[in-house]
Image (cartoon, rainbow, N blue to C red):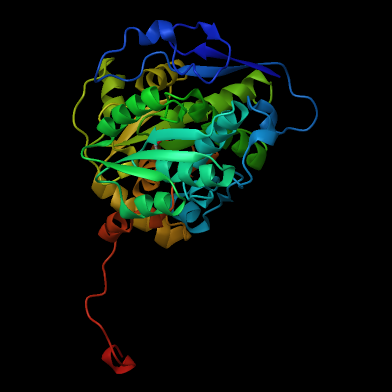
Length: 391
Ligand SMILES: *Cc1c(COP(=O)(O)O)cnc(C)c1O
């Protein structure tokens, strides 16, 4: 297999090299307050020989990946939910089972390997929390130095996690969008690799592995995939994985992808309706999908249009209810951003085909944000000192 970059906007191709992040021709027209222009995709040439091995479809050789078990996450068959909703082929992909407890490990793993192959040992990034704690953990396993810019509102668990892994953490007086800008400036001045989502093409390439795994676990492509959307990189990664499988002739149709946004952070929903991005301050308790301007917005929008994907928006109240329902009915406790995808399923399932193979991506572990999870439960008010107090 051979690999090159192709610009998702203008189609120009480039050799893969670490200094190249976005298409120089397209980024020349970049304005503030809009998604990234010229996001690069990895293009594959060749065919699969022998048994299917996801590593064969990745642009960095296996030997460069750090010794940490990313991916291969469990595909749950939630019996109670299947019975309650009437979907016997409903599956939940538990990406909170990754080493740092979120889907982001798929991207960090790929970026770490690419940096290693390129002889780079410093990696910087901005993050709402998960990408940062993920890069910190995967970087620790790889022996790479990680510098992280976190908005002040990031959940405590994600901050503590990154510090445990030994990352240098700067807390930013402002939101993710400000942290993103600072981290890019930091990388420009200090060198090293920048892992910002979409800006580093290897983030989407790593995220595609979820689709390759779903194909392995199901023995086919699912019919419908629900994925929560912040910057739109997981969405693009899911599409990329299935496109690679189509290209290799392993599957015959693109699954229907349903992106789920929080109502208070629905820039991509608005853009799908109007055709353009506006910058409206976002707010949702699902911090991992809280972004004013989706960095991968143009690319994600083009993919949704090309493959007739769909977007739904769910309220924070729906997210909170979906989180508690998933926990209590299946035993899978996912963070609000992961629960958003499930809330999207609960919102639209009456119009889905009953026999369809449906996958909901649970993208992060619920313990990542206990404060948010407390909203969906009732804390026991009083203390007891004897069983007689309750019987
Ligand atoms: C980052 C993240 C998302 C959203 O991914 P994008 O690529 O930003 O759309 C969803 N869920 C969790 C848990 C995340 O950390």
